[in-house]
Length: 82
Image 1: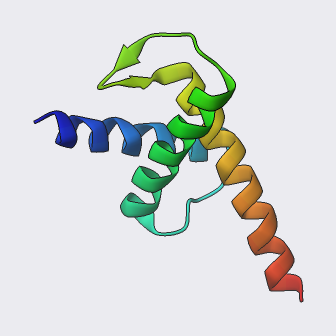
Image 2: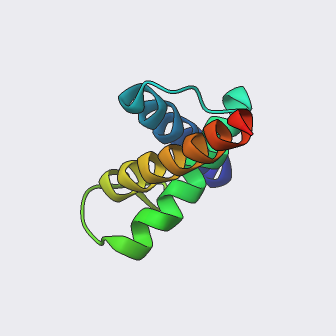
């Protein structure tokens, strides 16, 4: 049950980060989950504060997911132009 909750929280974090940036995460729901989980990892490396749900610190995970989605969107934008 913990793993499923971890995936759900990761998906919500990825979805919120996409909403904040106004960009769609490539891959739909799976992309949101991946962005949320990788964002949680990035945020955990940078910050250590905030409420924890399913072993994910919410605020750092959201910040990390925003950073990840921003970087990925910039890379995809550059690839489309060339």
